[in-house]
Length: 430
Image 1 (cartoon, one colour):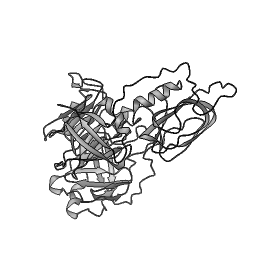
Image 2 (cartoon, one colour):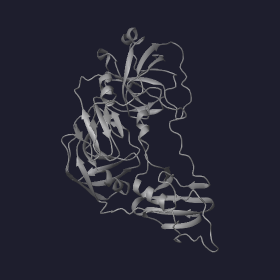
Image 3 (tube, one colour):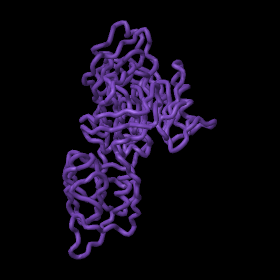
Image 4 (cartoon, one colour):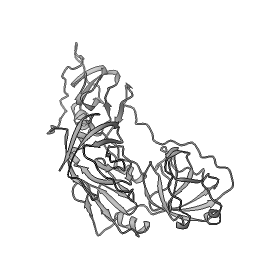
């Protein structure tokens, strides 16, 4: 077990651990969330994480019978006598929401992953090495397509949205009928803020992270800077978990059905502080990349002549937290969890950045190892990729990945990732 940042732990097991044994160990982890990897557990918690002697109450594994028409372009005749009745086990989830990595494909029939990905249709059954999986949504993919199913594997309108959970067993039934996968939805849009119209392509409605999403293979999400989102909400008298508008680069135009108290927190923009308005034009964001606009859920009483943008009208209920914010271009990290780890490195921020992650160009050459067995990640994980670049994971990151993790951003330093802009230089250091 090794530290994964200052509020997590990476627990790695022998290569021959079975999926059943791995999930039994996962049930013993006391943490905010536990991500199962190929042969590891990644515990995310507030404070110390550990393996306890008592187990959590967890969902019993289930068995799913799934029909597959083995009509795929990479299907081989020598596979056909063995696929009907094949039993597979969902070892872990990752890659995309609800994608289950399945153990049990015969090693003698393994095929290497394709060198490049291409578009893959929902319902495709594919293999890479001796792992198998179903593409539950339309997605790029580099696995070998053997067939198709029309079982509804994922639909965000369902609860839970994923059919297969880690630890489940899948029985394959070979079929000759045509498969027509049903319509599904990858992700539900966030609920709109009542009485608010948002016009802007770089704006997202966010709230606090939801760690229960990890069970279905999704990131917890949440604001890129949780403290700023909470501060903005408190400034207008909202609950901490009320939705806020997260803006990047160029803020939106926001029209309100009636005058309300608004607050802007984060990087500089054409609006600032706490004010009343019926329309807000955030404009260009400066000295950073992101800011958070909150709008009161309760309509305030408005006195005659008030309502100018920028007028200070903090509600009496606001308890705005104050945070010590030092140089955002120096980011404190915890080395590892993987070896070789990094304790100090300067990087340049590239223009490849979004809520999933930020690609960084190290100012000294780094050598990346071959792909590793996939393991869990968190917001603030930094991967080393084969091209020598580093990628810092954002709040919408995949929950598992197969690249070296040489360092992890400290929990209270992750806000700095939100404000990194292309071309900037940033120092990561213990």
